[in-house]
Length: 433
Image 1 (cartoon, rainbow, N blue to C red):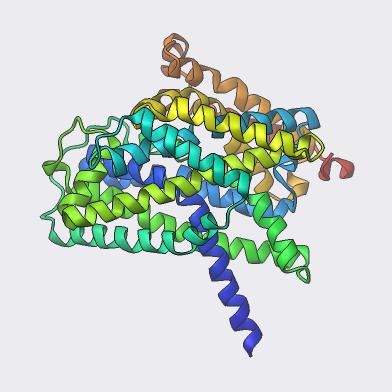
Image 2: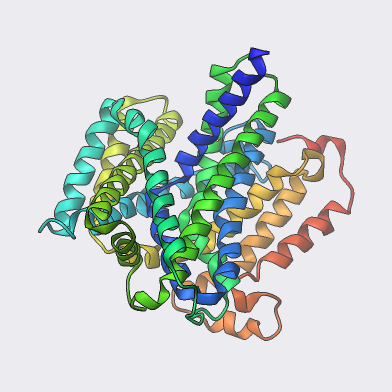
C-alpha cells in the first residue's frame, strides 16, 4: 500500500521541479501587459499564449520521455551535423538573450525602484556573482530554489485573487488587432519550448540515475504525468496574470513597459511592502535562472571538448561578459532584439517537438528532413519582417494562408508531413540514425 503513495508523491515532486524550470521570473513580465492590451479579448490572447508557452513546452518534455535521449538526439534524424548546429544555435541564443534578460528584469523590478544604481552597475555585480557560483558549483542555488518557487507562486496567487475579487470587470477594448496570434507569438518570448529541448534530457538523465529500476515505458508515463501537472500549474498562473492585466486595464497607462505593468499591479494589489517582497523574490528567481543557463551552456561545451575544466571556465566567463554587455539594456529592448532569433528558431523547435512526440514509426528520417527544411524555408518571410524587411511578407499576405498572422510556416509543415508520410516507410527508417 505504501509504494503507490511514494510513487504519487515523487510524481508531484518531479512536477514541481519541472514547474520551477519553466517558471522563469522573466516570463512573469509578459502576461500582465498582454492582458492589459487585450482587454475584453483576453481569453483569445490567453489561449494563443498558452499554446506556445505551456502546451508546446510540455509536449517537449513528453517528446524527451518518448525519445529517451538528450538534446543532441532531438534533431538527429535530420542529420548529426544539423543536430550539432542546432544545439550550438540554441545555447548561443540562451546566453545572449534570456540570460541577460534576467539581469535587466532584476534591475527594473528589484533595484531601480529602490536604489540609485545604474543598469550597468547592476549587470556587472549580478553576473560577477553568477560567475562565482557557476565556478564553485554552489549548493546555494538549489537550496534557494526549493523554497523560492512555492513562495513566489503563493504571492502571485494572492495578487491574482486580490485583483479578480475586487475588480468591477473588464471594460477596455482590445488594442491588439489579432489577439490569438499575437498571444501565440508573445509566448515565443518565454523561451520555454527551447527550454524543454534543453532540460528534458537533463530530467531524463537524472531520473535514470535516481530510479534505475524503471524501464523505458515506466519512465515515459512517469515524466508525462509530471509534465502535465506542471503544465496545469503554468496554465493557471499565466491565465490569472493575463486576466489580472485585463481587469486593471482602466487603471494602467497604455505606454507602460512590461515590468512597469507588473510592478504597478503588484503595488495596487499588495501595497508597497508586498511589491518590495515580490520584487526581491523575482530578483532571486532571475538569478537562479541565470546560473542555470550559464552552467548548462558551460557543461555542454565542456562535454564537446573532452571534459576540459579550462573550456568550462572560459565558457562561463564568456557567458557572463555577454550577460553584462546585454543585461544593461532595458527589458523591452532585449525582447525586441530577441524577436528575429525567435522567429527563426522557434518554429523549427516547435516542429522538432511535435515530430519527436509522435510515435517513431510515424516519423522516419525523411519525414523529419522534409518538415524541418520546409519549416525553415517558410519562416524566411517572418524573419525578414522581424529585421525590418517586411516587403516579402506583405507580398504573400493576400494569398498565402496564415502569413498575415506570421504563421505562414504552419500549413506547409503539415503538408510536408503528410506528403512524405504517405509515400511509405521502410522499417529501417523508423529508428534514429
